Image (cartoon, rainbow, N blue to C red; front, side, top):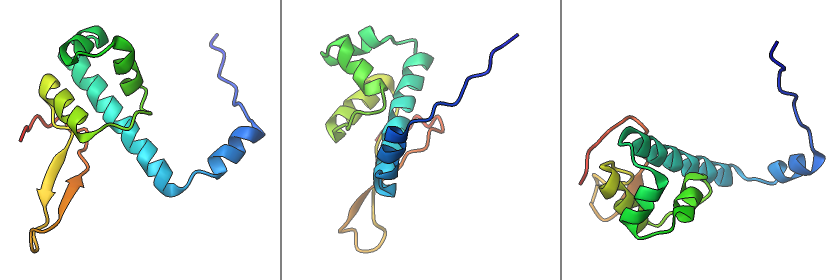
Length: 116
């Protein structure tokens, strides 16, 4: 017989979560989505953390940090990861108006393999 997980309640955690703004939550969600997309690509290409680290000239512990979903990536790092894994993590599009503004478009985890 399976034992069901018990819900954990902590007043300290409730206070911490109450102080998180919607913007902070969206940022955290986006970092988690990036980590998941990287992990999924590694898995589909059968690339281990150690192998990705070697290809990027990093320690495996850095890759572990990236996959935790808490890392704030630079555009350069996302571009390099995407090149190695054959995925697009950034999609830069020009505003269709006067072309003076550039926006970073959120990439959904749809399996798209388009590289710029």
